Image 1 (tube, rainbow, N blue to C red):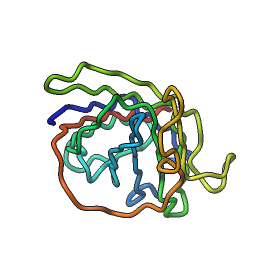
Image 2: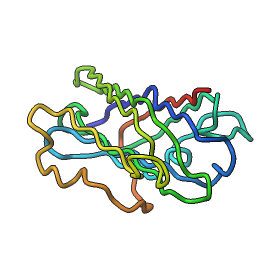
Image 3: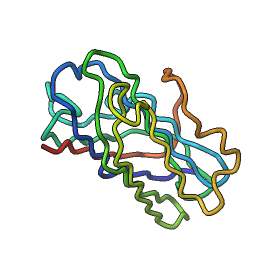
Image 4: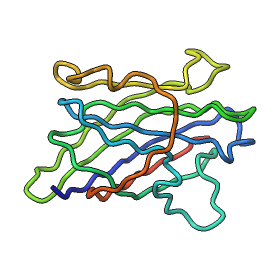
Length: 168
């Protein structure tokens, strides 16, 4: 079933703005049945900024658009992960907002307050932020546990958009 997914306000605040190139951020979104969308590299998945733009740097507004599979229910859980590469890998995310809609599917919106560093050298010393706002938790909740960042292939039918803003 085709659908549309919009991500707004993936809002990072960096420790500094050096050494960010090549650092990969991954986002997994889940519905109440444990079905998910896996965006393995936000920038490669659908960065829409001008050529030469440096994503996820202080003061930048970053926009993404890509495709993925439809879910059976609205998004209610997320797993945001950094691969932790590089000497200046840490970043702070304020929130992630997700809006979904599709043919014969009502519009749904969910905001996940993150307010957490994704870094090995800053508390909570984690590279993953998991937020579960499903009514009774995600069915098959183990699906949203921390994971190793890895590329996966495949296509889908959802058109997706994401906006990320770094704050000063």
